[in-house]
Length: 49
Length: 217
Image (tube, rainbow over all chains, first blue to last red; front, side):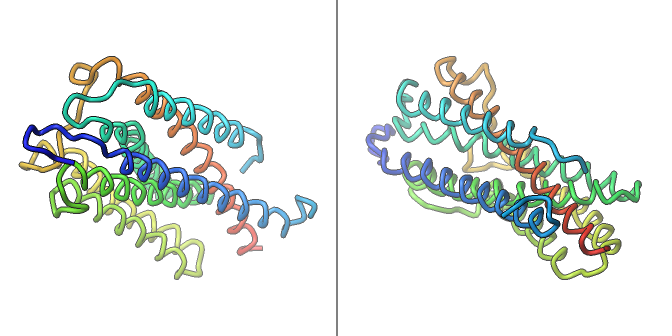
């Protein structure tokens, strides 16, 4: 947190929050793209169920 | 559009680099003098920013080529780059808000950098929405290419906003202004994000191309 010295102490909860949000969004989006791509190929009969 | 294993390789390489760079940034890199541990958000925030702008720059190039060459491959690449660029830009805003709270005391401020970034998310997100509403693939390709070229005007404004206006957001750092101890995790994550972004754009573009083929069949 900002203190009179201008130095921030602590704040690990914000660091974990930023990395967690990034991991969830990037993983979720990658899984969504892979699932949609696979579903589209399955519809064309390129991939077996 | 050819089906190859390359995008999967890019995704795997990107993931491995991001895990390595993030571990380095979180546990091995030294604490910054003034921001303390909160500065570690930089190792994920800055690579996201670089790659969001890179994805949208690729979308701009695809839009230009798509307009001049009547080739659905470039329209598919445009769709892929737009979607990945919007996801990264939205993620960028979230990471920025989380970093802003402990350093500025607020989650959000209508500062030029933040405002122009929000405009970027909504402008390019709007083009994706536009694509959903247009049934004719030829009109969809033309309209979204024109819209992407117009929306791209905002991207250099985002980049230069911190130089042009007296902004709360800090100006761009360079290797001369960043300690060497901070550079390695930053570079590893930047390349990790680059490979991940490239793999995602390639797969998303193939998906768009397959859908278009199904539409016109």
